[in-house]
Amino acid sequence: MVSLMVIGMTSLVLWLARQVARHEQGLRDAEHALIDERLLLEAVLEASGAGIYFKDTEHRFVRVSPSLSKRFGFDDSAEVIGKTDADFFPTEDARAFREDERWLFSEGVPVLNAEERQTWPDGSETWAETTKLPIRGPDGAIIGLVGMSFDITARKRAEERLTLSETQKLESLSALAGGVAHDFNNLLVGVLGNASLALSELPENSPTRSTVHEILAAGERMAKLAREMLVYSGRGRFVMQPLDLSGTVAEVTRLLAAVIPAHIRLQLERHEPALPLVNGDEAQVRQVIAALITNAVEAVGDASGVITITTGSVRADRDYLRGFKPDGLPQGNYVFVSIADSGTGIGREAQERIFEPFFTTKFTGRGLGLAALLGSVRGHSGGVKVESELGHGAKFTVVFPAASAPPEPARGGDVAPTSKAGTVLIADDDSIVRTVTASMLERAGFSVLSAKDGSEAIDLFRNRSAEIVAVVLDLVMPGRSGEDVLEEIHTLRTDVPVLLCSGYSEHEHVGNGTATNALVSFIAKPYTSEALVGKLQEMLARTLR
Image (tube, rainbow, N blue to C red; front, side, top):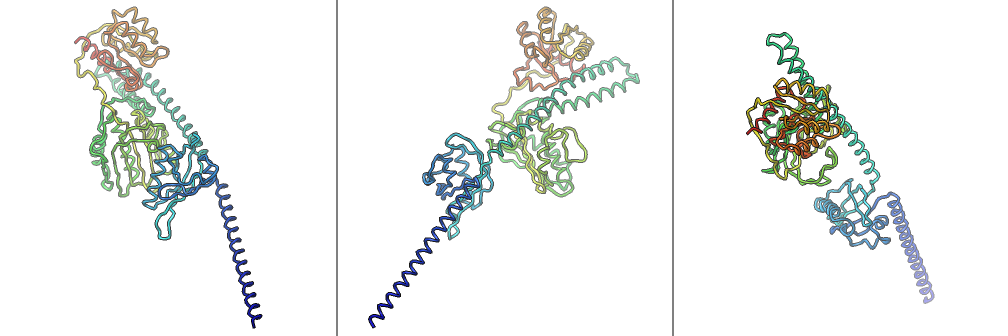
């Protein structure tokens, strides 16, 4: 009996031993399988080129992939555990990463395909496309996050090269437009000047007067086109003064509200009760706002819709300014106006070309279009950005630098013209301009000396300064520029009035240091006989006071 019990116990022990052995083997197999799966997963992750990391809700690294730990400067991933982004990245970058993660932890909203600039401990700089997903515990509470970061530096550099190429192309077009407009304005001085002189000699009942009037009208239309080309080039004719952008926007909106269709509602919003002033040409700024509102009305079309016009101020950093044209706007304080419509939206391809000269999505073109608008904004040192998706409307945002201090008001005022005559020195490299300007002045009773360049003008003035009562000076000449001649003339004689003239804007030259005062004034080309003589006599009247 005892023997049978011993045999039974032995069998049971052996059976249990076999079961334990099988279980242990199963655990070993499972452990090996897990190890194999982990190695396989790590191999796949490393091969993907992604930097993988896990963080807790305190933004501390819990685990990182080997490739990422090496970027941090460690061979062992364990050395990264417990650290945060602030231990590896510059303060600005680390703060941006943490803000994304705070939003994720508080709202549970994933961060998808965010582009991040990364400056590593070794000083290298890369760009990454990062996705961050929340990790939840058994009770559904967020206990951390997993991040996947893909290096897109090559793509970003390619985009930057493309952007640079586009910028260079637009700058070339801009320079071409400005140069053509400048030469065009010189020619128009001849057209408008000679036509106005001819008109003054014709009897009132002459049938030729109507023909000359047609020439003047055509010349004015050509001058308008030249002005539009200068605006596109950023060298338009600006009269800068302090502006309240919100007030200007409100006034333009009120005027347009009376003429837009009844099914479209204009909604004006102001983010702040009082905005900083901007330095701008009021007429140009009004035109920019009106053009964008008109475009929005056309985008809404016959459907009922809303156009929202918003003003505000912003401390613009690099991220905010991304996407604005022209590229490279400096960081700083800006005042903005945005016009958002509920229309059909703008496709990606059209967005990429929307600021090109003569590009339009309408059936017929309308001149330089948004290219001229961009030129006007660029002339104010500002920028414009379009955001849109097909079927979801479009929003245009224009930013202007906030004025640090209001510019000094222009001197002068209404001054009675004088009939004082004398000798006027004309300096211009264009023979047509010299000839017609001389005719205008001689008709008004002045004697004229002409110089074809800056050096000749200085020589004539040095030799005959006693008889010269005023100088009409072109600012853009080969060799010695108008600015050089002006400085030299006022070194020789400080009391002579100088009337500067150019096919470019007064603002451009004043910005370069050619200030205007009682002895220095400006007239834009093309000018008529009445405008030139009137301006000159006004300056002479000031010098007699």
